[in-house]
Amino acid sequence: MLNLNIKNFKCFYNADVPINDLTVFAGGNGNGKSTAIQSLLLLRRTIEHCAKWNDKHYQYEKINNLNVELNGVYCLGLGNSENILPIDYEEPKIELGIIRDDKSFRIRYNTNKGNELYITPDEILDKSLGFPGNPLLFQEFYYLNAERIGPRIAQSMKFYDYANVGFQGEFTAQIISDIDSDYTFKIDEARTLNDTKYLKGSRFQHHINAWLSYIIDGVTITPHRDDSTHTSRIEVENSFSKGKPTFSTNTGFGISYCLPIIVSCLLAEKDRILIIENPEAHLHPSAQSKMGYFLGVMANAGVKIIVETHSDHIINGIQIAVAKKVIEHNKVTVNYFYREDKTDEELNEDKVLGIKQQPSVKSIQMNEKGELSEWPKGFFDQTQVDYIDLINIRKGL
Image 1 (cartoon, rainbow, N blue to C red):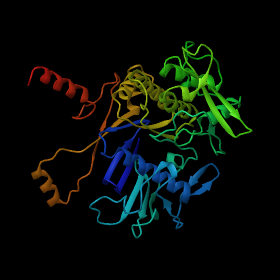
Image 2 (cartoon, rainbow, N blue to C red):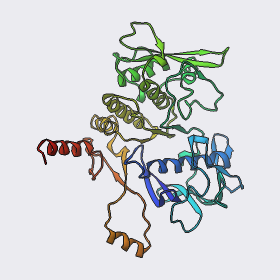
Image 3 (tube, rainbow, N blue to C red):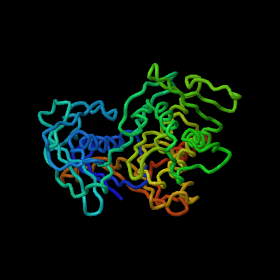
Image 4 (cartoon, one colour):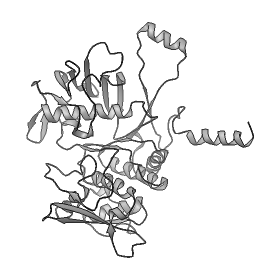
């Protein structure tokens, strides 16, 4: 298991976040989930921009005075270099790293004057966690932003070093078309939905449609590519279209938001990181549960998946995957980000001791039956809270 270490970045003064084969970031708004993802994206961008390319992977051996932008790449919008420092920072330095056992890869950054749109790596604190133990050093790295591209009549196309759907799923149609025309591409058997109800062939498109139809009942897609206009598009069918496909703009957002996730999971190389924000977006609760199950299958096949979610249905689907033995229980970690309730006396005591206030991260495990090791206050219990409120209202309390 990996640990993401964050020091002096946004809401965190010093935090460790466990990263498993399937890692879930859960918790209320404003409690550090996005900050943890942004720190990982910033560390990855540092490697892409500042490291040396060594045949098939990155090698970051020395500081080369290059800066790392804070906005644009990976949909980051972090502002200037002072914006990403915590409120009560003492030193304008940021440290980001990942740790595995007794080895780590850690970078320290200088925020310079504070008004720059970049930060500057000024020291490699540790580089003992090298390739292939450090998944950030692979060429392939996959990220899907929470704000994905909705239904479009056509999507643009681009050159790519490795197959990926873009940060917002904007190249999904092109990638499906490209891979589907490459008859040498083979789906990992561990990622196959072996059910003839859903799987109708052996091509990439058939595997996509199998999982898509499983998650969103009866829905399938067909990719099209137009080299004369350098565009591609998706046509959609469901149980009501009766063999007459339609533009994705004539369907709901759920298909367009779900499809890039399925495609990314099926094409991702083993041992690489895939970050997915809000996989539940625009999906019915039953589809959310099936999406959680799907992510369990994909993580068990070797993709290192990190999911940020506000959906208890996604968690339920993962629990079902564990209970059905499609993923080993010790490959799943749920990190619950929350703000501790402290009395004024406790806060004053922390102040005297020099303890700075930051979000807490509680790691929750699952057993072989898919049961969570604990259920802390505020962790997907709003249904019960609302139900009790309704009972009291009806009783006139």
